[in-house]
Image 1 (cartoon, rainbow, N blue to C red):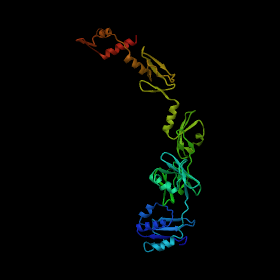
Image 2 (cartoon, rainbow, N blue to C red):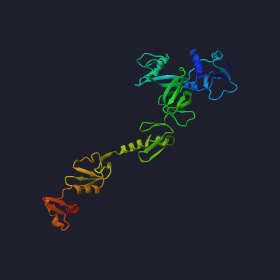
Image 3 (cartoon, rainbow, N blue to C red):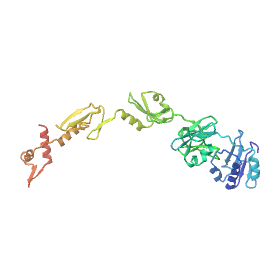
Image 4 (cartoon, one colour):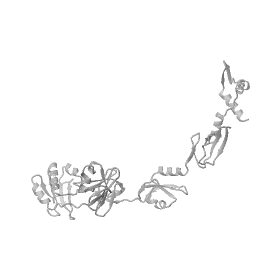
Length: 372
């Protein structure tokens, strides 16, 4: 088969799969732009050809082959297909290298000069053993943690952010997977979208780390606060880089994180009886419960609000209302004389030693007592 000539195979799904499996048994490895399931589950031809770079690709054709392609029908053209394909189907040079595996408890097994992988005090294991032996990646005890793209030396680690082709927003690497007889590696983003490693143009490095510990990219939305002027603002990080570099500005990843920080600069010292949170320099009122006297204060410190004989309020009116409703005012003699003082409103009804007092008259008497 000449380099520029494309052939395609037609036949049943089972025959096409069997043909590819035969090539694999003969040591042939291949790259594909799709997953094996996509190739074998679609009722479409397979084309195999060698690019000018020497790279061999196997694709499923979603559209009809062009007239320039030569059809090989299975099973009748089986031997002819093998005879044509095997001489040019070379073992593909991998474009990636696994640098690290990681266990569930975060132990790292690194690539050694020998080509094997080991932890500091462990035995060394081959790539195949790390991927497929019992207790390794296939069983879920290890994950591929770090890989190198050999074409440019770019290193990618789980959790890195990258910008793929045709996307404006970055993605985060959630998982690496090898497939096609361990010849191919793909990147699975935390969103579930799958990318080839060559499609991960480059890592997106954070410009800053926010005060709440989040790595901020140029297209991340940032929330800033100036500790001197108390000014707040929010914008994409790339538009507020000068502010992010100024020590007086604090950068946060969310508005909630910024609010929490601002609140921490002036924490709540105590909460009043009526449920108002009092901070430094806030004005408040309190009642001395021993003498039922109302005081005001605006000098708030860390000891404010802790006096057991005081009860605290946010306003003078609420403090006075509490005194009015709680200060002892009446003697028994005062109550028994209500009918004499306020006749003929019948504030008191007597009978069988039971006294029923008019609320209105009691309040009038209370005001009179307080005003003396």
